[in-house]
Image 1 (cartoon, rainbow, N blue to C red):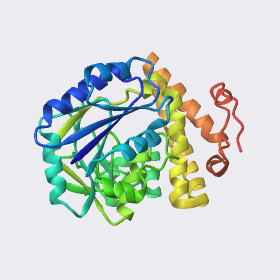
Image 2: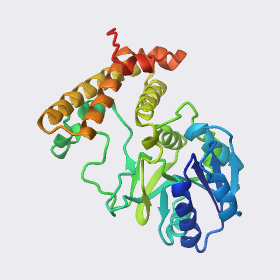
Image 3: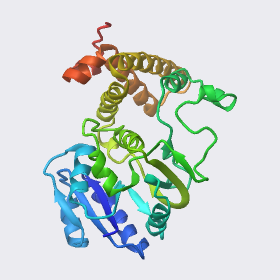
Image 4: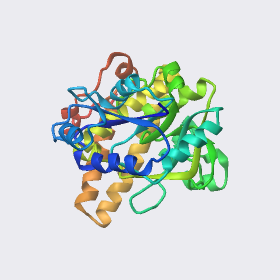
Length: 331
């Protein structure tokens, strides 16, 4: 088997049919299998796949195991030389997988691969980035990103001026589409399951790099990614979950001092964003802008209350209901 495609499903019947259809219609010369790791869907997704695509191997996890663990289950069941981690809200373009496999075969020095990811309107969706640094995080927090065009000192965690139109090595790839060599995924033991939402893709790529392999991006083939299908169901929950995994990432690679340092960056960033959102809401109030304002305010309150070291080491998190109600205790 040349390729195993792992698709995580959680109530994704609305989009996964188009994803599966695009794989079968666009892949012509590559032997592949599709494994759907289902996180307890209740919308008929599993029944739909069994009926419409009986050749797909569906693993029913029975509950929401989140991204990393559910994908690891799929990886462990795979038989391919390559493993593709693919979101259900993607559309594979014609010959994309055939061409990417050939590209990967030619680049034995690389352990993981990405292609050009497009929004539904055809515009480029940023899918390859450098690893975050404290300097870059401060640049983003203070709104200094435009200065990166004047000096690399202000690089804000993106490849400034690059629109995904040239082949290059990147630090990490978006988890919506990551092709990796199966032997390397086995070597690094797949995704780190402490990253249950966000940062699991960044951490995976970092460990591929640490194992001595590069991450290659090519614009020669493309996919379309709808994006945000899961977060639309409970946006604030996902925002706060992403805060937890962000702290876990900085703790894993920078320790206690690093995660405390990052907390000050987060507080600064959220304070700046809150001020800007308040100004825009004052000038031109809208319901959508007010919703964003409340989300930023709640996230700021959560970060004020959190002790990042206790959060990571002991799982101590501020009570979310209290945070939402604005009961803030400044440490």
